[in-house]
Image 1 (cartoon, rainbow, N blue to C red):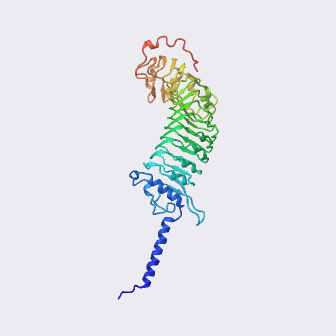
Image 2 (image 1 turned 120 degrees about the vertical axis):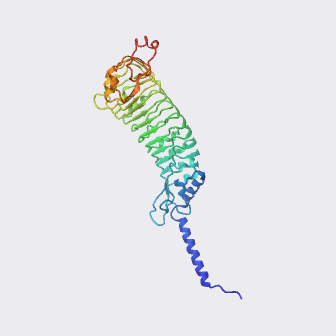
Image 3 (image 1 turned 180 degrees about the horizontal axis):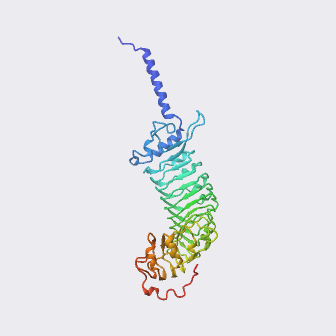
Length: 418
């Protein structure tokens, strides 16, 4: 005779099962919008699991938990919105996985995180293109993809990201021209496109009136300088193929750092650059500039700290007016065609304030004061490969030009002693 099972037992088992089911559902369905969770899953799937180290933020993404309803060490690198009421869902607002050494691709599903405000994937090993779907992130204010291996062109439709303030895609393998739509991003404050393979010309950026820093160094950009926003403070365009005159920078009264080195600029360095009230660093070395007009500073103190004009075609006498710049400490006038004697006013500056003076590879002549031997301790620089008579132990100890290069060279040398 079969033994009857107690119905109360079945009831208890059913209730226990229902409680477990409800609790399980709560643990995986909590507060994050399901489509956002799916994006995070797709993101992690697109990463080579071998590159996910145990101490990386991505290793803490456990999809048995809710991304926006976890505490402690789960879902590191994620910030969520806070629901206004119990019926609302949380959304992913920030992803920061900087320096996680992740290898893989950036999934196109990233475009579904429509509440995303900040995306920082800097210093990883992402490769392939930046997905076009990134233009769906209309609330994005910060996009940092620097130091990866992204290739292809910069997203053409990037101009729709009207809230973007920081754009940093430096140190990748991006190519093609800079999208003209970038001129629509009027909230931009900082742009870094350096160390890529961009070609073409610089778009007209004068409409980006809030832009403070623009770095396009180490690319293959050509053409003339455009007009830049008047508020810009840092402008770095070194190591490109730019040409023409450098006069467009004359109006940038808030400019602090200017680096136009290693291009093909011609013409002169006019006095207006030296008159910029906040300029601290000027580097126009390795160009084809033929003249430099250094204005005397008499009305107020200059902020100029560093001046590098080496490897141009500057000629004439060395500018005496450099001594009127009270904060100037580093000067490189080497590898030019300067001639005549070194101004005696330079020696006092070398004794008290100038810490780095390079005059090498010019055609300077005359004798240097012997007493400088005991006063130039700690001063860097070089006076080599000129036509000087130097006491032993000074910064010209590596030798001068042979007499055949110096005889008759300075006769009729032009240029104002300014």
